Length: 414
Ligand SMILES: Nc1nc2c(ncn2[C@@H]2O[C@H](COP(=O)(O)OP(=O)(O)OP(=O)(O)O)[C@@H](O)[C@H]2O)c(=O)[nH]1
Ligand SMILES: [Mg+2]
Image 1 (cartoon, rainbow, N blue to C red):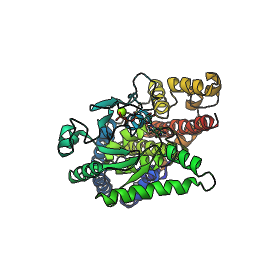
Image 2: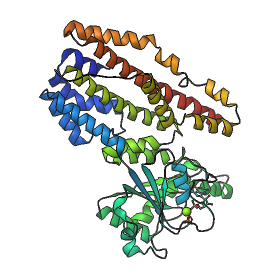
Image 3: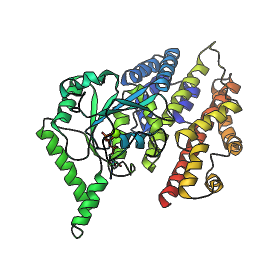
Image 4: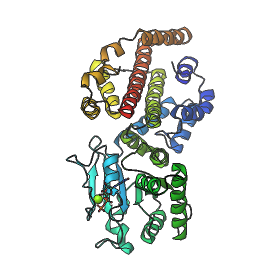
């Protein structure tokens, strides 16, 4: 059982736990930012210190609900042909040939502001925006024309050098207190060309550094002093700076928006899978802490159900979040040219029955309840139920995340 929650339940050393809370929580979420704002974190700490458990529960529940419902609108801007639509498709997990994908091509295609919903997460919308300077989108009135207030952040894309219009735009976005990130696409093309033209002296890292330095010099020359630049290939999101871009976006988003972003991070690398695992672990833990607090509040109704349909739903959601739902498994099998059954038998998260019939979880929950009862008495069955639910959810999450790594490995080998 989690040490913090176990101490919380059995020893009620709230003052001591209050000072340990920020460090403990931040270790748990491991640099993913989590869903608590600094203000809420401090509020929870104060509630713990003063033993105001009901207030603490309210704060946690409010954060969990806000995180669950937060919409996310991402603006993707750039000149014609830089790879905006390709970038959006890649983030939506769609190939260019799929029906719902944004049109991609060598001739200009994005002329209007176009919203693209994430196929799995309808609260997420990517806005494909024509570059400033294209007819109808003049630099002076660009942000007003595209209704800048609705976007959570801006991705400014270029496949060569950033333009004066890009710099102007960045300055305006900054003045309005929003975040922007420069993405330099098609680095795979640059590497390919360099290797072909200088096969003897070619060094991948050196070429990438040159592109980075060049973008930095280019942007500072046109008035953006310390830009955040990320080199990507839309054909290979696991490589180059895309993983760093994901980490940065997750950390820099307002806390209540991070959950929505964490959902859509594609499981294309071990580090992306770990980032998602840590993020959801933090959410499960907060939910558990607030339930544990409810168990200690006198006269508080403490009904904590997690029946079989709910368990199945929970496991199904994690599978979906990590790209292991039935539809995704079918697609992976097709892509690898492997029988679907072979993929299914290589992972554990599809076997719901054996996951829920885990004697270890029951034993651990019993042990926790015994120590709780020996100290405090009362409430054994509800505490037992709550600990079981916490451990089961963690088990679902960990099994799915481990499976996602197995499938990723297969895909890379394939
Ligand atoms: N090699 C390589 N090609 C890319 C990359 N991103 C996009 N492309 C190609 O570049 C061309 C233009 O890509 P789009 O995604 O349509 O570009 P866009 O910015 O949406 O273009 P418009 O809609 O005309 O403004 C297509 O042929 C893409 O396949 C990349 O990272 N690497
Ligand atoms: Mg386009």
